[in-house]
Length: 177
Image 1 (cartoon, helix red, strand yellow):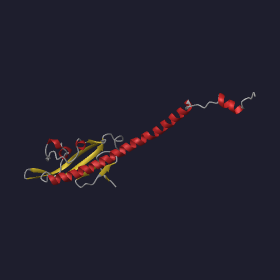
Image 2 (cartoon, helix red, strand yellow; image 1 turned 135 degrees about the vertical axis):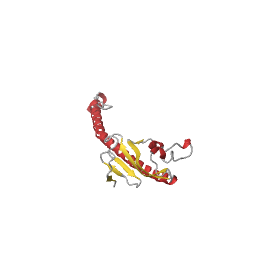
Image 3 (cartoon, one colour; image 1 turned 120 degrees about the vertical axis):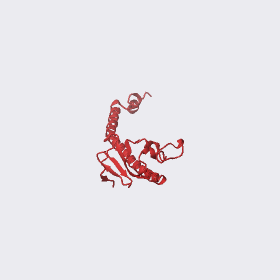
Image 4 (cartoon, one colour; image 1 turned 180 degrees about the horizontal axis):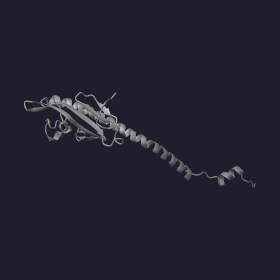
């Protein structure tokens, strides 16, 4: 009974081992594909960041316009606020006042938010009985770095209409759609 093992049994038993992992070439190909995908995503990420900053600036302009309306109705003798600090203020510092109305958040009061610089200016005043009453204002939002933090500048005034400057400045002539 000296039987020889069959050819199939011998091959499986001796040397036809399957590798357990990936080869170096397979790993390099996967890394190259990942790098290519990352390089395609980086410009898209920059565009998304600028769009998010633009949207944040628009919302902040709307917030400032709403705060101005509230300020004018709360302090009718003063009219509108002519600075962001007058619209802001720390609630722990005491009750609201015309110089610190506590209407807008502190991060917007600083004038810097989401890559944009905010300012209130061009205030028109009327003097009655020795008191100045602000009857008009202009709020602007411009990118800190045009092309990097944002592309457009935004402007609004007491009418609440928001216009933009496609070059990122304060020459706002185009109305938002």
